[in-house]
Amino acid sequence: MSDKPVRLTAPPEGYADWLADLKARIHSAQQRATLAVNRELVLLYWQIGRDILARQSAQGWGAKVIERLAQDLRAAFPDMKGFSPRNLKYMRAFAEAWPDAEFVQAVLAQLPWYHQLALLDKLPGPETRRWYAAKAIEHNWSRNILVMQIETRLLERSGTATTNFETSLPKPQSDLARESLKDPYRFDFLGLTDEAQEREIELALVKHVTDFLLELGAGFAFVGRQVLLDVGGDEYFIDLLFYHLKLRCYVVIELKGGKFKPEHLGQLSFYLTAVDEQVKHPQDNPTIGLLLCRSKNKVVAEYALRTNAQPLGVAEYKLLESLPAELQTSLPSIEQIERELAGDGSPSDEDEA
Image 1: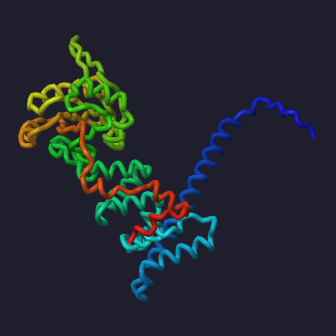
Image 2 (image 1 turned 90 degrees about the vertical axis):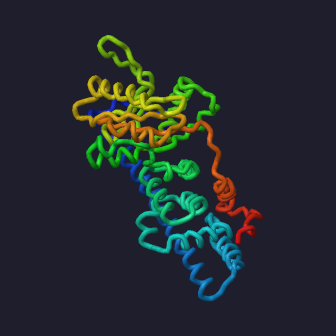
Image 3 (image 1 turned 60 degrees about the vertical axis):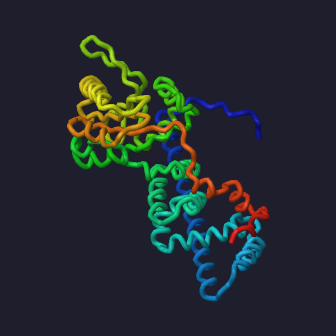
C-alpha cells in the first residue's frame, strides 16, 4: 500500500455547505453528550448526599462514616474522581440545601458540579441561590463568572438605578429596561484610583470593554466611543454608545466625574433626541440614556427625572470597592476542591465537620 499522500481535487458543488452542516451537527452532539454526562453526575451526587443524610438521621451514623465511605468507594472505583471525604460532605450539603428532587432534575442538573459548590459556599439561602442558578443557566456563565457575580452582589445591584422608565416606556419594556440597569456599577477592574478623571475612565472602559460589557450585563453590544453627532452643522460627541439586543434600542451612556446635577440630564436628553433622529432605525425602540456619576442624591435624581418624557436613568459608579467582609472569610478554595475531586488525599479532609 502506497504511503504517498492523496492529492485532493476541488470539492464538488455543495460540499462546503454539507461540511459546515456536519461540523455543526458534530459540535452539537458533543455539547449534548457533555451536558448529559454532567446531568448524570450531578444527579448521582445528589442521590449519594440524600442517602448519607437519610442514614445518618435514621441510624445515627457519625461523621466518620463519610471517611470510611470515601475510602471504600475510591477502592471500588479507582479511576473515578469525586469520592474524597470533602466532596462527599459537599454531596450531603447539596442534598440538604435542595430537598426537592424535581427542582434538582429540572434546573440544577443543567449546571456543572463546581457551580453547585459556589452556590453552596457563597450564598446563604435558597432564594438567592435560585436566582443566581437561573442567571448562570440563562447566560451560560462559567464558574469563575458566577463567583465574580456573587462577590460583586449582582442581585442586590440589579434593577436599582434611579429611572423614569415606568412613565416613559410601555410595559413590558419598562420592566426589562429597569432590570437591565444596576446601581452602583463597579469599575474596580480598571485599576484606577478615585482621583481618575472622566476621560481617563472612559478610555480605560474602552480598553477593558470585555470586562465593561460583563459589568453592564447580558444584552449590551458596544457601538463606539466619542460617537460624532452632527446637529445643524455643530458637532457633538457621545461618551459611549451601546445597543441592547433584548430591548432593541440604543443606549447612550454619559460619564460624570462628580456628583449628579439636574442639568446633566439636559445634555443627555439632547443626545437621545439626536440618536433617535439620526441613528435609530424605524423598527428600533426609543433610545435609553444612562448617566453614570461618582455620587448622587437619590431624591434630587428622582425630581430631575420626574418631568422628563425620555427614558433616562441615573446610577453611581465605584472605581475601588473592597470585597464584603462576609465573603472574604467564606471564599471557596476551588483549587483545594479540585485536588479533592482528584482524590489526592489532602490532609484538609479532616478539617470539615
